[in-house]
Amino acid sequence: MYSKIPLKPHCEPGQPASLPLFQPQLIQGGRPDGYWVEAFPFRSDSTKFPNIIGYGLGTYDMKSDIQMFVNPYADSSNKTSAWTPVSLAKLDFPVAMHYADITQNGFNDVIISDQYGSSMDDIWADGGRVSWLENPGAPRGDWVQRTIGHSPGMHRLKAGRFSRTDRVQVVAVPIVVASGDLTTPAPVLVFTAPADPRSDAPWHRETVATRVLVHEVAVVPADATRGEMRYDQIVLAGRDGVDCLWYDGNEWKSSVVGTGLAQQKDDPYWGAGSAAVGRLGDDYAGYVCSAEAFHGNMVSVYTKPAGAPHGIVRPQWTRHVLDDFGALNGKHTGSIHQEDP
Image 1 (tube, helix red, strand yellow):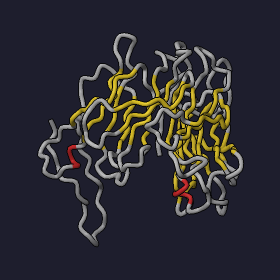
Image 2: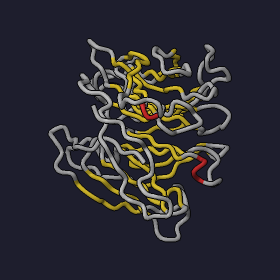
Image 3: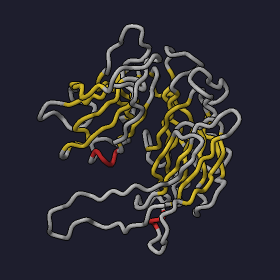
Image 4: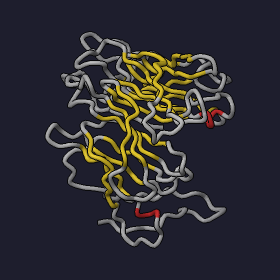
């Protein structure tokens, strides 16, 4: 077990900044499997000392245990560095998660997809559930689970305010619509919470676009645009490349950043696999990074000319290949899975 060290600036006021000090911390060892790890701010009014949520995909014989690891640094009187695990739920083949304060009580709730199937070749036709786990306001287990909606092959989701600001919305995108189907476009869904999210009232479901093999979804918050955009923007990375969806108050619109990696002979994967938007100076979208293609081996960045408009949707973007991390395997996949801003 590692010792607990105090978290404080590593330079004195008025002095040049020194390099940050990083110390490895074992959160959990000996897991049977692992897939998703995400920082989870327990309260919605602070991102300091987030807990961590982690889980694997599970198997047909063993459900996945969705665990929250409680941050030992949140309590200054705590002398241990141990991250205490709390079991939130046990689910069948969970994939993606995010969080939002759905009940608007000051505590973030977990939004998660499950019932995916064991692989892209074993998609549950009646699965693809999206649900939310209600935060009880204390780090205890077995959070109440409520269904948001279904769509087979559900693979990525994010919470935001995409076409209204008074209720939580969830953009959710299947990667495929059926086992082994790499060509049929999948729906890009936006679910809107009912007035009382704890009630039996269904979440409103809207298909705002269709795309092929979307591997990653990112969100650019409206707050980051300094008034340029009224609602959060949705950035998608898939076979269609990298593009942005947004609601202008009347209708949904889209803008292509770039088409990504070109189609290669006998390779079923092209376009993009993930994307992240980076700030440059006072431009909230100064560049866009992309890993290509699906579980690929290429890293690219999209840039725009000096003096170009701020944001994603108006500039003309140019793709630059930064690196190639080696040959693909026999299944046409490489070593890159996901990137985050």
